[in-house]
Length: 246
Image (cartoon, rainbow, N blue to C red; front, side, top):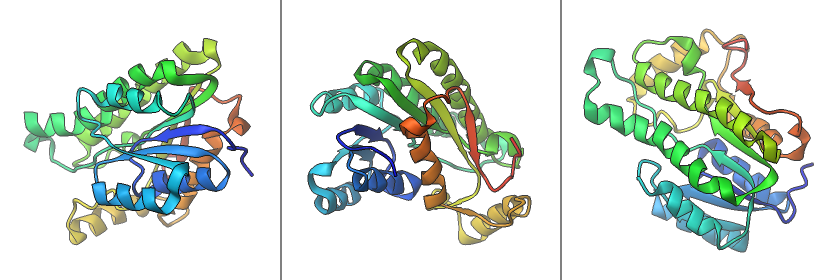
């Protein structure tokens, strides 16, 4: 399948969902992966399970030092063949309920974090490396109560297109994964009633008529992180069952 042997990848926000699935696949294909998260018990369990093939780091993407901390850790293990900026936070608020605190809670993790991370990690990327950014179909859905989250994902998608241009002279590719409704714990902050209502609203618009799985999203991420996608950069790749038809 993928030739990840002796290659090093970093995935932020990879203690669950599609990030974790991709990390474990990279290991299975002979690579080494650095993953980040905030749950120490999950990080410890993954380190115990995968041994030397995985490096687990507690890292808060909202921190001003997130990029410096990651760069310092990467420097101990070599240069990166792939970087997936996947860590994010989601919440639903009516536009007139958004406060300064809520704004920074979302924007610091979803926008400031990956911008600072790439700024610090760019010098640790091999030429021909692949950078992947996780966005969201929320940008295009126009669903009520998603204005802040959608704005944060729109901002990072715009940044990724510029990064693709800026890193192209080094043959470093930058692409954006655009998940639709994926069966992960990403919306765990919602009550069951609210989660079912929100997902029903979205899923009713999906031509394939169902949510996607973390494995299905990870499959596309692995392709974009691999050399099989060597002539793709600056692109948004939806994994959404046809929801946004892009």
